[in-house]
Image (cartoon, rainbow, N blue to C red; front, top):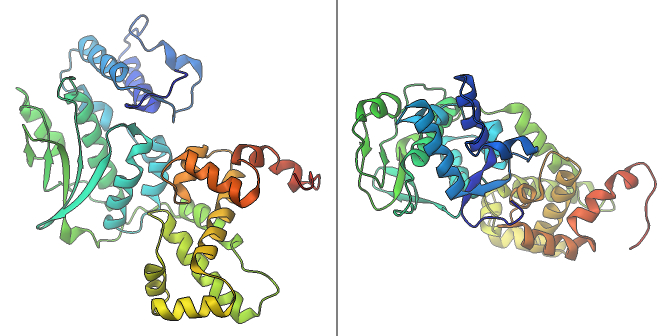
Length: 348
């Protein structure tokens, strides 16, 4: 467990699988689930081979050859770390789909998810490994996706345009249709989950308002220099908020932020130049301040903080943070408590 696997799933999946079996009174001794007793964080990743062995053991122990359907329905947003945070803070189905594609890699390693738009659908695609028996693992994944989407949309009858599998159709296909709906296809080149394009603008009725306020409250700390005029502070604060809102999906460009502020890119550049700053400098300010705020919340692992402030991985975030602050994120986090109670360490 000390070496990070290049392909794997978050331990929380195995934990939920174990809970499913225990509820049936099944003894898991000697079945490979012992590592769950080590107190590992749910965001830790286990090798894909281990996960598939556990799924196979569960199928054997229960006699249920569609075990993935049952486990997938147990998965809730709070089980998914950063992916769960991002989903619950989405404002529309379109945002939900974009964030699922971006943050999926935080719970499933080595199987990147891509968002493609074609025809009347927006489709999430990801690869499989044909040499491995991954069918029940994929069943678990798409079942979780479907039920998370239904909960966010507030429609228990929502059915994707298509759920595509790389595997041949199972013998007991009726049980899959009963849970996933009739729009299933098999023997495809990649896994897929398609949503009708006309649904993308639909607002989510079950957005977690408390979570949104926690994530967005950090933006309040991204205030410009107090020596500037109140008009300038208002302008920069508005821009900082627009940048911060966008970071949950991707690093925004100046054109996108200008449009958000109802002005042209040229006007935004000029107004920043008048204040002896640039869009790049202000973006870094927001990223730095948000990073510090998230680092003070011990619930968030560094890998998740990296994504929240717009970085693809923890190492690039660490390099940027050290460039901004002169300290690594871990060291800054360790000394945050001392600074907050007036025991500042002085320049380092």
